[in-house]
Image 1 (cartoon, rainbow, N blue to C red):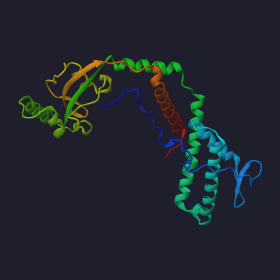
Image 2: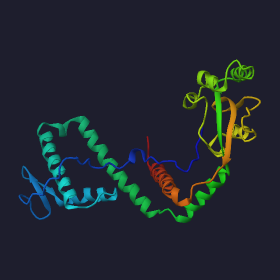
Image 3: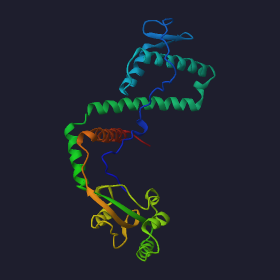
Image 4: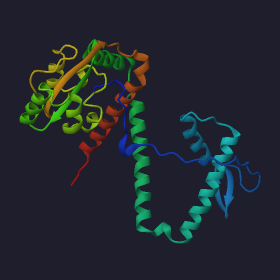
Length: 275
């Protein structure tokens, strides 16, 4: 079934932001030992610059973490450990390992791509008016009623008619037939029951047949969609109240950002010479 639900989440695919994994151990104290202005430590003579802490703290605060001396101490401790381990890895030749070199290049590309996407979104802000217009469009498409419906999905019309006849003759029940024969793995374990849903969340042939039924009634004939043949029974219906705009604003913003990201990538690909 296709979904037009407002609660759609957004995936940023290959451009997902990668954050530093901060350990959950005890807070470390900031050392007042080695280090020069602009540096927070030295590891085997190699400086760990303050800018790294600032960058990682910026990432953490953007996720809602507090900027405290204790948190900065933890970040510093992680950076010191990372510097020590990376130096040891280089001593052992891992910096020349082909697989590691590929991963380093992918990380470089990913960071550059993230920077480009962030700049694109900043220069193409999403307006409140656009989000409200989209909200009204979706709310209108959802309608004012939602339905609790069961279905049995079959590959052929002949199979569907055979099962409908068996149910009518009381040789089986709708729920049992759904559990045993339905091709819809998501609903067969519940006797074919789907969640409460408005017609707009369902493929059109299914929705058109469903809204014509009365509670407890089964569609008189199997209904064909791109998924196969459906035996449809309406169990209940009720008024539908769309969630307020403020409750779904974040999801709408994520949807628009995803569209902006796809547009940005598409524009760059269109200009690129790809062989």
